[in-house]
Length: 376
Ligand code: KG4
Ligand code: ZN
Image 1 (cartoon, rainbow, N blue to C red):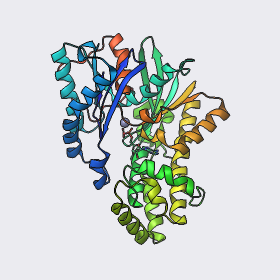
Image 2 (image 1 turned 60 degrees about the horizontal axis):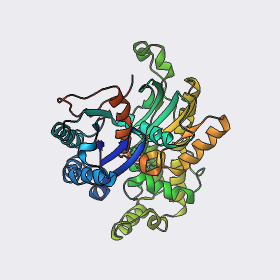
Image 3 (image 1 turned 30 degrees about the vertical axis):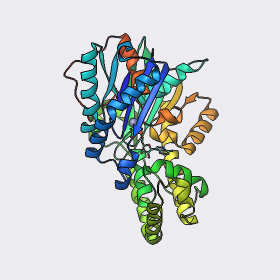
Image 4 (image 1 turned 120 degrees about the horizontal axis):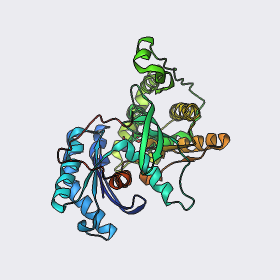
C-alpha cells in the first residue's frame, strides 16, 4: 500500500507487484484552499488528519483485501509541506508497527516518475527503452532526471531544475492574477485554445552558469539544464498593467465568485479576445520552453526515451507538442493517464515495489524531509 500526503491531496492505493493497481483513492482539498488561491499549509495538515483514516479504509475495501494481506506499507517522505508530510508518515509508521509490516519511504518525485513506469508496465508491449529522460513538472517542481535501471533498483541523475518558480506555480499565479479559478493549470489549459498563441511574444532568457560556480560543479555544470518561470509571471503582470486589464479582471473574479462550483467554461464568456490571446501566448511560451530544454537534454544525455509526469503533464497543449516533437525525432515518449498525472498514492506504491524487493526498509525514526532531493 502507498500513502501520500505531501501537499493538498490525501491518497492511499493498493498496487500488486508494482504493476497492478487494485485501488487508488484520492481525497482532494481543492475546495478548502480555493478561497485563498493557493495551498494554506495549516489547513492542509488539518484536512490530511481528517481524511487519512477514511481514505486508507476506502483503498483497502476497494482493493478487496484486508490490512493483514499487505506485504508492506510505503509513505511519501518528502519533498513537500512538513506538517502535511508528517500526518502521512506518523500514520503509516503506526499502521506498519501495529500490523508488523515493513515500512518503506518514497521520494515524491520518484513517485511521479513511477506513475508513468507503472502504467507502461501494464501495457502488453511493455516499457520504455532506457535510459529515459524524465521531466517532472508540477506545482512544486520542474526537474529533469536521467532515469536508469540496474537489476531491480532505479537510479536517477538530476540534469536540470528550475532556479525559481516551478512551471505549475507559474500557471497558478498567472491564473490568479487574471481572476481565474484555483488551481490555475486546468483553467489556462481550457481557455488557451480560444486565443492566439502568437499574439504576445514572451521570451525565455537563457540562464548562463556563473564562472565561479562552474568550478564547484565541475564539468557537469555545463550540462545542467536550467528553467526559470518567475520572469514570465512578471511579464504577464506588466502586460496587464500596460493594457489596463485590471477592471475586467476584477469583474471576472466577482462574477466567478458568484457562481457556485465555477468551472473553466464559465470563465470563457467572461474573457475578451485580448485576455484569451494573453492566456494562449503564456501557455505556448511555457510549453515550448519545457519542450525545448527536455528534448535538448535527451539529446545531450543520449536518452532512449522521454517521460513527462506531474500535474502540468495533464496539460493538453504540452502533450500535443511534446508528442509531435517526439514523433519527428523518432523518440518514444510516455505520459501518465490524467488520474496519475496529479498527486496520488498508486505512484508511491509502485515506486516502493523495487525497494521491497531490495529490502530497503525505513526505520522507526523516519521523519518528514520537506526539501528531500532525488538523485545526485
Ligand atoms: O503534481 P501535482 O498534483 O502537485 C504537486 O506535486 O505540485 O501538481 C499540481 C500542479 C498545479 O500547479 C496545477 O495548476 C498543475 O499541476 N496542473 C496543470 C494542469 N493540471 C494541473 N497545469 C497545466 N495544465 C493542466 N491541465
Ligand atoms: Zn506532485
